[in-house]
Each structure stands twice: as structure tokens, then as C-alpha cells.
Length: 119
Image 1: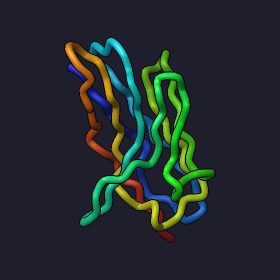
Image 2 (image 1 turned 60 degrees about the vertical axis):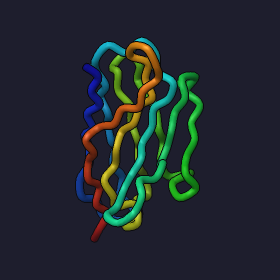
Image 3 (image 1 turned 135 degrees about the vertical axis):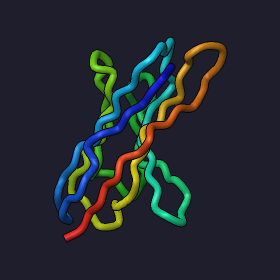
Image 4 (image 1 turned 90 degrees about the vertical axis):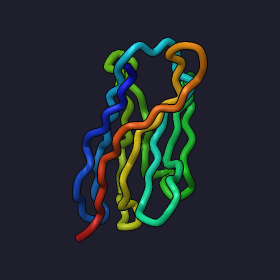
């Protein structure tokens, strides 16, 4: 059974940094892409950053230059380094993976971790 488990969220002051981690486990034959999404109450979930199988990355305009998405294949962990955080970055952050675990590509999500940016 595939699991994605996020950690690293919390409360940080504006201008501060946090690093989110997402450990993935289970029988995964191939990874199409992974990434981070975020959601605030009353709004749709939005893409923050994605990383493709070849490690190319893509970022939303709102976080470009401040956030860095990376992956450690040996540790089976996805990271999101968040610097120069702003109050508008406050959200629940979800880890995402499009994975091949059997007969087709399927989308998997973590349970989410809260990030609050406030003084």
C-alpha cells in the first residue's frame, strides 16, 4: 500500500524559513511526477511546485525564487524548502505523486501539513 507522509509544518514569522518533507513508501514501480500543493479554506487546491522523473522542476509564480522542490531517491523523500515566507503562504500543504503501482498511473496524496506564517 502506497503512503505519502508529510512533516515539517508549523508556525513561522514572516521572512522565515521552513522545510517540508514527504516520505513515500510502498511498492512503486515508477514515478511520473511528484510535487506540492496547498489549500486555504474556501479556495481550491493550487499547485506550488512539481518535479518530474528527470528532476526538472516547475513552480507557481507566487513562490518562484523563494521555494525549492527536490527529491532524495535513496531516502524516498520529497522536500520543499520554503524561504522568505509571507503571510499569504499560510495554508495546508499536500504532497502529491503520480505513481505507477500496478496497471496504470494513479494520483496519491498525503494527509497535509499546516504552515502558518504570522508574527
